[in-house]
Image (cartoon, rainbow, N blue to C red; front, side, top):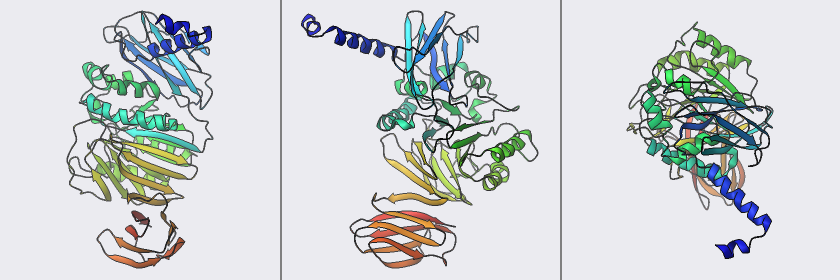
Length: 465
């Protein structure tokens, strides 16, 4: 060891000590901390809210900055919850530069804990990536497998370190012990890392019950009497619906939701709720109130995607151009699927999460398993849907625009067939290399399977309106 240090000059020794210090700060499972640190996005690109809980009252100090010297600010936050289940801290960082990496650390007694995050993209941003999952309850060890894959995906593309949608049922119930032992369990490093690096924007599930502890640990800004709210992030607007307060015609929540969607000028609007209106009905049935009251607003205000959970599997339903995605594979015990449900395109019993990528006027969604394999993919391009490439060649692009089916990227003349989901053949023949067009004006509205055989084989589903 002495020989090692002799070879280091003063500059290298300083760097070595900084690395050691940084690694110590990243020790997220410090046992003096009971929960966190974790993040909530307050809706302003220049802000980020940090939350944590300790086991007993003792002064904490927080510091942050764009480097691990933490030069942008430091403070001694006030404990916001006394008592045996208190010792909670909620602190909002201000004056952040949008789309910037920030480091933070919290010093509590002899422990130092910290992490980093990316501040939100500017309000006029045209590009965005984010993640979504749900139903993490009961088995934190399985949630840890899902978040492990999230971290690998973020390592590959840091743009996904923006925010994480949670579709409800964080724990099996709303008891303090469940929050300790399930969602915030200190033994699962991947869960802790995800919570510390990106804001989790959640919805109340049925297992949150009366939401006493849910509201304590997730103090999202509620504009009304229920746990509903919305936020903008770059090019998206996300409305979060609380299905455990009234959202029928004339209710406070439905009036709020309609006004909220009507006033948003963002090019892409999403709705997040817990019980899906359309899903694989193998376990819980479709929520008919969502069909009656939420779906019409989706059609009126151009909401293309609704995130739900509740059923512990993945399901993708398409109803009148609205994609209803059941993201219930975040760690809860999986349910079997029987492939039944209105508008159902695909259902798979597997742990998973969603990757959402927005690029100007297009969206690409991938559903990813913990092993990295892709369950489903959906593209929305100028309101043209390309659904679930079953076997995808990256060179071949197939899409529908108006009443024309376009195919591009073929290197040689190839054989192509177009069938509906019942197997009825609507076209069978040769297609030319380069870009080709097929007139589909006589095709009824619905989902079609396009199969190409040649040196670049592919099978893809497309939607014809």
